[in-house]
Image (cartoon, rainbow, N blue to C red; front, side):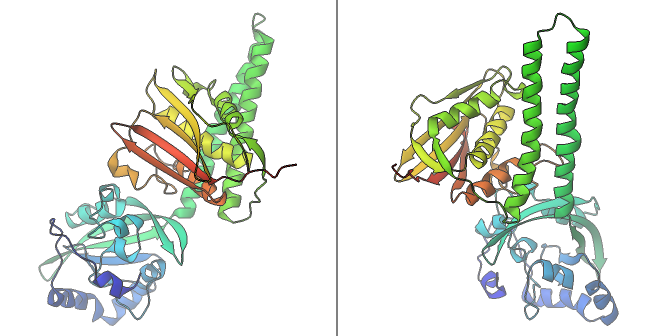
Length: 386
């Protein structure tokens, strides 16, 4: 985003204040006139920012400008961090950075506010932006530090990009937690066959088979996601039946632990038609929708799968009665963002990126009156007649 475009943005009269030009000029001069400190900060590999009490930038080092793809000829002084980084939430908000409904979940904003109050607690910030029409997901770790100079209050933000660390943590969680648990269950079933002569061998064999398949699915899900992010995945199209696909998904998840005391059903009005797509990627997307719905649903709740065909498009959808809080809705598809803890946040992200790979679109609606409905809309490709 250009500095001229940012300069033309309107600031709402909702409590967000800005410094006057002469005040900004004076404040930025504090950090521009001393040659040695400025060049030392520019040599730092991580970003360093100084913000005034209005959270406007009064100093930004070279690393931050490079991270933001900010032109060297333009100055970010007087602008807000989310605007300069092209955060999608800031761009959607009328007043820009800190004015969006989801901004209160932003770790960077929390760091700014707490730093101005003297709290130096480290925060993490996940944001999505578009650079040259390419979507990027960043996760930043930010250290705030209060600063007082000439009787004025500032906050210093030091930060590094930890996106790769988050990817590693997600892989570790998959392999060290999920897969280890599944392998442990297989060992438990095998021991049951040895020590419990009353155990049904066919039932135990079925459970071992299901656990083994889930291990394969977890490993393959990571392989597919990495290949998609690198642009190396090849789509393997086949003729599919929409109703049969829903039955496959239902059969895969209705017997799992997450579905206990919950009902998984197919909408009776769902269309049954033949179309062309990649069954593996479709199962990944719909499977993540179902898993999220089951995890969010209270006991005795119903999760419904369905499909509609309208206007040359086929839409697969999953519905449950739980509601996603409004403050999280703009972040749902961000990589590494999750309300479930560290190392999560790949499920909804993978839905979106795999949907894009199939030339489709994943969307959702969520509210107290309607519950939550995730949908995958695809172009309806009809198989060639033989």
